[in-house]
Amino acid sequence: MRKVVIIVLVLIISYTSYGQLTTDYLLKAKALNEAGKPDLAIELISGAIDEKGDNRLMLLRADAKLLKGDYSGAITDYNEANKIEPTSGEYGLSRVYAIK
Image (cartoon, rainbow, N blue to C red; front, side, top):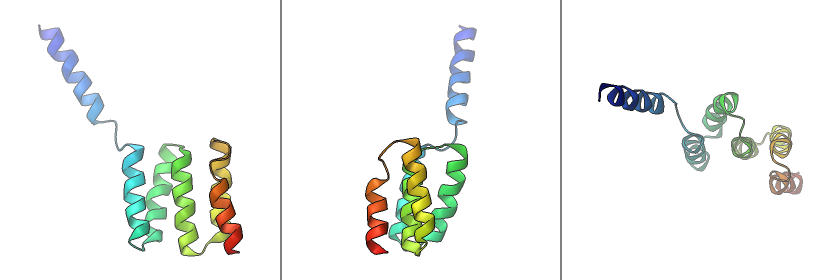
């Protein structure tokens, strides 16, 4: 019985110490973008990208850079998202080039 309790405690502790999930970063950054604070969104996402290399994070950071007016930075991030998952950033690239 004691071994079972120890195993359950280890599982609970390891689950809670995992950290933030990617969706948490995505939701917070999207809320910051919609609130008109792309600088804060870029900071948040840049930290998350260092931890997890997810193409959705790259796409959201590119959207924030687009809102900020940094078109070359947005193009770079959309291309990085394409490297992680092919054709994931094509729509964003077309938006940037249409704006330019």
